[in-house]
Length: 222
Image 1 (cartoon, rainbow, N blue to C red):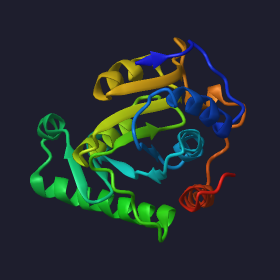
Image 2: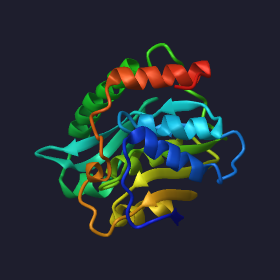
Image 3: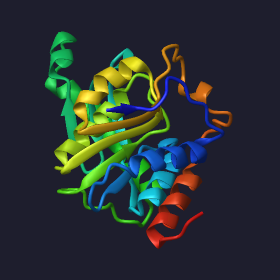
């Protein structure tokens, strides 16, 4: 696990990605794949992929929120039909198997729709047996990233590096042991929100995600 400073401020996601890519380049994995978490993680991941000369893909993950407590995760759904459950929470809330199935089906439909919208005609990259760099633009609670890491493990990646420009220290403590390695440019003690570490934190559009994926697939540099 490598954290380079206690505080970092970036002009925008692309600059953060360039700084992150320079650090991740020292990882030394053979033939890596870079995975960006849509939408904000994709511009960062694009720059990391450029630095590594690696292909770029996305991973759409959705949390299965508990009824009436959407922030509490019953589990998660990843593209490709992967379903993961927090069985202790499901049992504690008394969620029936039928209710869980209905909630999961609803989230699964969202994952399919989002994946189709963002990736378009591009096929997903094969990840089994490959080293993967998972990138987000910042990590607050770590819930989505943790779900994404679990999905990638299920897809049998050979190595998993988590890379992010900035993260909350608590999320770093939780996620660090789940990765084979971790690179973070900053973990400020007074972390409040990811956006406070970017001068420009405008929302990443669906179109930008598609454009960056297409540019990476074509071997172009923007």
